[in-house]
Length: 102
Image (cartoon, rainbow, N blue to C red):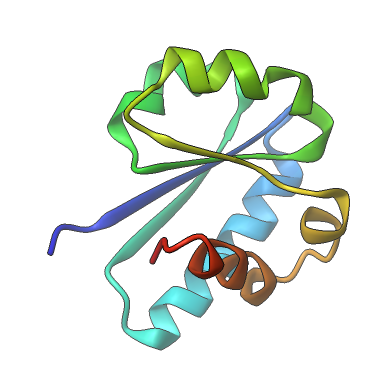
């Protein structure tokens, strides 16, 4: 099975870097072949077609529809304020698993 690639986007890329590294630690501990990267939302069109999952932070929820439209072959998930605000990698990994990802 090929590596699962997840990209997390927010308006600045700072909070997503932290939560992305926490998610990566959870996947690494599970022995899962998953790569989690964090980006500024300005990069979504550059990397969106090269990943399997796009996670959008709640502060850029306005971009959900346009992101889904621009990247129809990529799973796009808008995180809730509770999920994102938890800053807990396990919470987000569980969210993805509930959606059949990972």
